[in-house]
Amino acid sequence: MIALIAILALFLLVAGFEMFLVLGIPALAIKETYFGGLPDPAVVQKIFGGIDHTTLLAIPFFIFAAHLMGSGQIARNLTELVRALIGHTRGGMGHTVIGGSMAFGSVSGSAPATVAALGKMVYPEMRKSGFSEKFSLGLLVSSAETALLIPPSITFIIYGWMTGTSIARLFAGGLAVGLFLGLAFAIYVMFEARRTGVKGDARTSWPERLKAVKSAGWALGMPAIILGGIYSGTITPTEAAAVSVIYAIFVEMVVYRNFSFGDLVRITEQSAISTSVIFVLLAMGGLISFFVTLAQVPNQITGFLAMIDAGPLLFLLVVNVCFLIAGMFIDPNSALLILVPPLYPVATSLGIDPVHFGMIVTLNISLGMITPPFGLDIFVASSTLGKPVMDIIKGVWPFVAVNLIVLIIVTYVPEITLFIPKLIFG
Image (cartoon, one colour):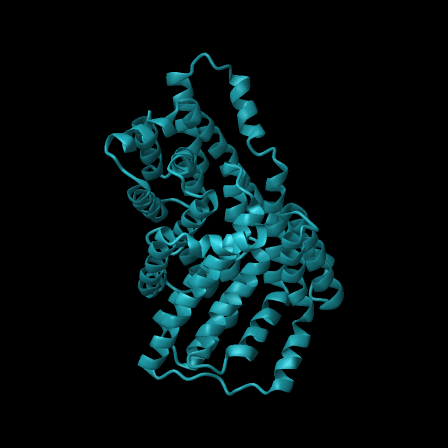
C-alpha cells in the first residue's frame, strides 16, 4: 500500500496536478483497491468531518489577522521598534530583519505573510546599509521561517489537530526553538557584517527609543493579548485568534485609520481565498490519513524498524531526510499531511515526546519553505520584490546550511524544545 500511495502521488505531482488531487486521488485509489466495501457516503463524511474541528477555527482567524496587519501599519511599527532597539549593532539592519520577522510572526503565524508584509519595507534598507543583494534576499526569505516557530504558528495548530498534542505546549516549545533559530541567523549576520565591513545605524537615543515604543504601543498589544492570554489560561488559542482579528480591525481602522470599508472587504476576500486553499488540503489530507491508519501503515513501519533494530536516533534521522526531500517538491502543509500520520505513532512508540517531535517536523517544514526548487517563500519574495527566482535561490543556500545545523541540534537535544513547556506546565 505504501508503494501504491508513493508511486501514484509522485506521478500526479510530476504530471502537474493540483496538490489536493495529489492527496485525494491516492486516497480514493486505496479505498477502491483495499476497502471497496466502504460506502461512498462514509468517504464524504470523512472528508468533511476531518475539518469539522473547533481547533481549526484558529487558522482562518490568524490568516485574516496576518493580512490585516501586513496591509496596514502594525507590521511597520513593529519593525521600526526593533530597528530603534538593535539597529545600531554591527549589521544592525540584518538583525532588524530577523527581529522584525519574529515580531510579525508573533502576531501572524505565517511565513509567507511575513515575507509579503516586510519584503518591500526592509529589503531596500538592507541594500542601503551595505549588504549584498544575494545576502539581503537570502536573509529576508530565511528569517521569515521564524514565523512558523514563534507562536502563534499555523503549522503548530495543524500538527496539534492531527496528533492531539496540546497547542499551548507546542506554542511554548516553539518559542524556545524560534528564538534559537533567530539567534543562529543573527550570528551568521554578525560574521557576514564583519567580513564585508557593514556597520550599524547611528545609535538611537533613549528618548527616540521611547518614542518608538509609544508609536508601536498598539502593535505590541497584539502579541501581549495572544501570548499572555494563552499562557495565563484566560483564553484558548482559537479564542486568541478571534480576538486578534477584532483587535487588528480596531487598530488599523479606528486608531491608525489606514483602511476604508472597501479595503476591509478586499482583505477579507484575500484571506478567504488563502483559507480555502488550506482547508481543501486539510480535507484531502484527513482522508488519506484515515486510510493510512485503517491499513495499519504505522504498524508496518514500526515492525520494519524493529526488524532492523533501529532506535529513536536512526528514526529521527529518517524523519529529517523524508521531510527534507518532501520539502523540495511539495508545499509544507501537504508534506505535513502526508508524512505525520504514518510517522507520529512510530515516534510515540519509541518514546519521543510529541512536542519535541512537533518541533522537528515544524523545523523541517520551515526548511522546506526556502528549499529549491519549490520553496514557497522564494516565490512569495520573487512576486513581492520583482526579483528573479534564481537570484533568491543563490542567496538562501548559506541559510539552508544554518537551518540544517539548528535542525540537527534540536533533533538530538530535546531539552531545547522542552525547557519552556516544562517550566510553564510542569
